Image 1 (tube, rainbow, N blue to C red):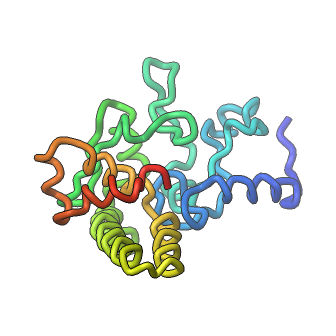
Image 2 (cartoon, rainbow, N blue to C red):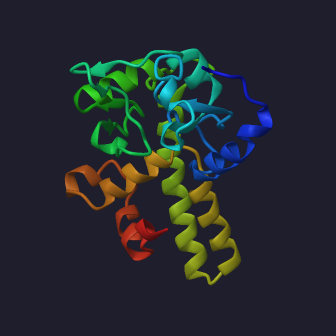
Length: 208
């Protein structure tokens, strides 16, 4: 039987999930809004036996959790989850980032359902997710060029500050896609600012 728990019961879980999330405790679905909710990947109403399983907890913003997903939980073939669990599945295998628009393109059914249910291509205010991802893509490149300038000028403290800013930026997946483009075919690298691919290799940004 489901019993209500004191908010203090979940406080340690909130703390750990917030630390696991990217940047400043960003939502594990949209990566933009700060996480506020303990999200049950398998909805507790439909899967009460998973309600207190650590592997079923994610950190999500209230919009993705309460406004978008709610109790929706489609299955593939009646068995496997159709949504991306970012703790057990690499989102980059199911979502393709389009740097010219900031939108996600689905790679297979999991990507399609995740885009649909979490409205990951919602560009209407206040979310404006594709616009924000495109801006993040541009901003990360500018920050990398400034980081390189500071390193060459031996401004160590400022370079470290910029590195922290890059690591704490929302949309950590965008940084992942940027690094993939930088190490990919030259045709794809044309979407990057001149010299960014070389800077990624020079400063071993993948290891950050």
